[in-house]
Image (cartoon, rainbow, N blue to C red; front, side, top):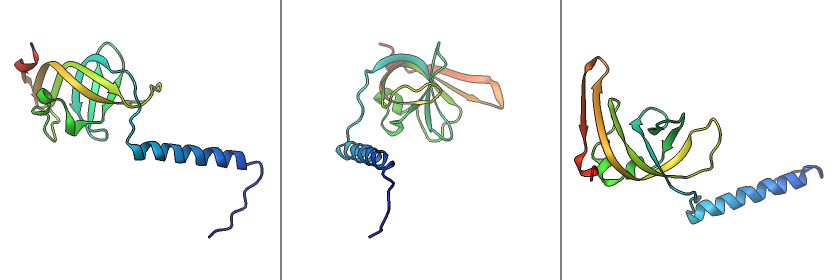
Length: 140
């Protein structure tokens, strides 16, 4: 179709890039997610613009990008509504990373379970009226 001349010096690089592209396309076609060990974290879940769901891990400087916002664990899904700009959900979460750790980047994770949830509703114009309550079904 097209006649493209490739420099002999660039041929190995082109072959490597083509191999990487085909390999990642095959992995996506099979639906394979990278496997990293799941870990428990204590943090604050909230929604925002851009990356819609985020999880701030306490006692660290990490913010995790939650990729399964539509499939959150059972006790948590009823407290997440779109948009929920003035609701924070604190708790103990088990997250499974979907990609490798990169310094300075937000890591994509999937929340597999949530326990000891505390929901905080507030209005930024009336910060003296913050409503905080426990989700008692998660405190067993």
